[in-house]
Amino acid sequence: MDKTFLLVGSLAAFLAVALGAFGAHGLRGRLSPEMLAVFETGVRYHMYHALALLLTGLILARMDGWLIHAAGWAFAIGIVLFSGSLYLLAVTGRTTFGAITPIGGVAFLVGWACLIVAGL
Image: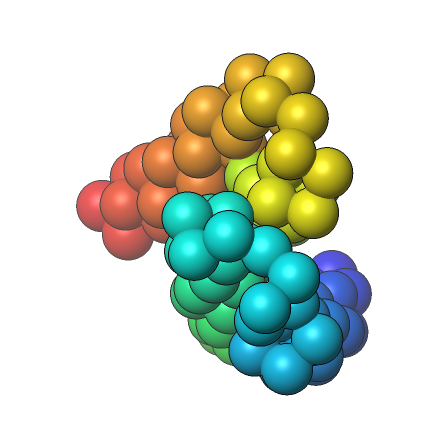
């Protein structure tokens, strides 16, 4: 399973860089400064949690446990829901996507809480 999170984390980091470049070069001038900031927030948390997925994979190589697995999946779900909803909100302007964002934020918190408990 450690390879799964290393693969998912690497793919997520790749996508975060690609989306960050797209936002900086393709969306500047097309989005309002506020919506561009929303997009950039999505990219920032996307990358943070791609790195968390890589960390989770490395931790699994040294120790196992359901909490560490749960953390990895929570981070992956959080990226999709939190960052994905911010990307959609910024690009479409549809505020209904903003309602999904807190669910992704909770997934991030669950992931970090799982790692905290696993560390204890």
